[in-house]
Length: 132
Image 1 (cartoon, rainbow, N blue to C red):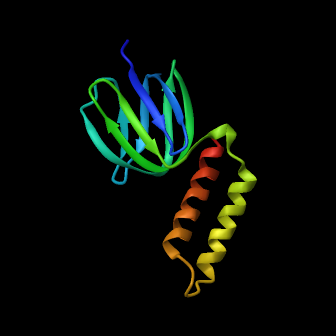
Image 2: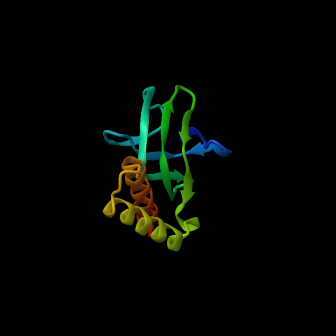
């Protein structure tokens, strides 16, 4: 059986460097399933759920967006953030969701709307992925 050599990086650390069976990732335009020998590709990763199949077992992660680079011999994910589903602090995610909703509801001239929308999207993603 063939594998995909996957490397995952965040701005602060190397998260993963190993063979995986399958990668499911959301780009800005579509959900992408990556099998061994996938064609080379560069895409933007959306704030979404990343699913990795390793040794026949699925692992779910909340990712905060980033870049995907599929090369002939390896696949690289450069992510803003990544959290394994069972490591997500659900209460913290719920508080972040409430803060973002409050900021968007009480729009004032000094609020960065785009930043609040992204914070809400990240919080909702973390809440969703934590249930996996």
